[in-house]
Structure formats: structure tokens, C-alpha cells
Amino acid sequence: MEDYKFLFKVVLVGNAGVGKTCLVRRFTQGLFPPGQGATIGVDFMIKTVEIEGEKIKLQIWDTAGQERFRSITQSYYRSAHALILAYDITSQPTFDCLPDWLREIEEYASSKVLRVLVGNKTDREDREIPTAVGEDFAARHNMYFIETSAKEADNVERLFMEIAAELMEQARSKELPRYDGNSPSLNGRTTVIGEGGCCSKFS
Ligand SMILES: Nc1nc2c(ncn2[C@@H]2O[C@H](COP(=O)(O)OP(=O)(O)O)[C@@H](O)[C@H]2O)c(=O)[nH]1
Ligand SMILES: [Mg+2]
Image (tube, rainbow, N blue to C red):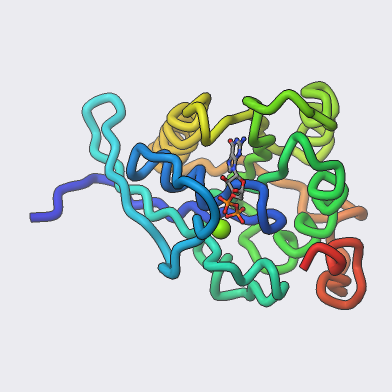
């Protein structure tokens, strides 16, 4: 018997290799996959959590390698309640691609979607993106921000639990936060991703 009060769809995007699959597996299965081959060929994983006595079912959509081919489409974003946009704090190129991802999100996702910027791999010594730079980017783009380590299980639980709590809060109040969809930097209709944009060299 399924028993839950809320069901939320959470979607992860970001360059290949930033650790999206590891974040999902850490949260849903409590493990860090060894070696290569972390990407699993499923559309989503499920975890039910409890907040303030309410059961919340999270349907977490990971990309099964599509990000390498830049073939993520509308169906993936459709009906997402929250979007996690992840980069690797040790990889400037993954951070530099964030505007491209935001354009895609802007084009395909609901304007009401909860957006969270995640800097992953905080366990590594060779950081390239200072925390303040990630924070600043998130603030300028109206996003939540958190740094994580899927490897060390640092902030991963918190990431998903805060998303669940925020979505529950929104659902309860039925007052989704207003978002200025007219932001000139974000509402471009054309998508450069996949057409020689900065990310193509990482495909
Ligand atoms: N040191 C470290 N490595 C990580 C972390 N998360 C993922 N990785 C590694 O980064 C690589 C890509 O991870 P993966 O989850 O497949 O990335 P995805 O392509 O975004 O799904 C793998 O070799 C992982 O072991 C982390 O938090 N710390
Ligand atoms: Mg993956």
C-alpha cells in the first residue's frame, strides 16, 4: 500500500561528470558507486521521506547519460516541481556552462519550478570555484544554493530534505513564489546548447 501525502518530481541537470547520479544514489540508496559507470539506465528513483509527520514521496529524475548528447528535452523537465542544477567545484568549465543550462531550464521548465544550484565534490582539495562565487551566481539567478559531497555524504540529505520541505510548504500554502519570467537575460527563445555552445566540447 502506497501511503504518502505529497508527491514531488525533482529533476537533476548539469554537465556530465559533475556527480548527479552519485548524489541521487547517495540519497536514495545510501551509497557512493565505486569507479566508473555510476549512470544507471533508469528514468527516476523514488524515496519517501517524512517531514513534520507527513510522508512525502520524491520522484528523482536523473539523466541516463543524455546530457552527453545534449538531447535532454521538454519531457524531462515537464511537470518538475524542483530542478537541481549541479556543477563540480573542481571544474571551472562545468560552472561556465551554468548559463546555458539556465537558458534550457527557462525554455522547458515551468516558471514556478524551485531551482537549486549545487556545487558538488567538496571533499576534493583541488577546488576551482570558491563558495562565494557559487553563492553569488545563485543569488543573481534567484536560486537556492548548497555545496555537497556525494562521496562523503556531506549535505546530500540536507539538499533533498530542504527541497521536500520547501515544496511541502508551497503546496500547503498554495502560494507558489512569484518569479519574474521577464528577466531579459533568461527568456531568450533560442537555445545555443547543442549548436556549438560552450558546453559542446564537454559532450
Ligand atoms: N571526489 C568526489 N567525486 C565524486 C563526487 N560525486 C561524484 N564523483 C565522481 O565523479 C564522477 C562522475 O559522477 P557521476 O555521478 O557519474 O556524474 P554525472 O555524469 O553527473 O551523473 C564519478 O567518477 C564519481 O565517482 C563527490 O562528491 N566527490
Ligand atoms: Mg549520471
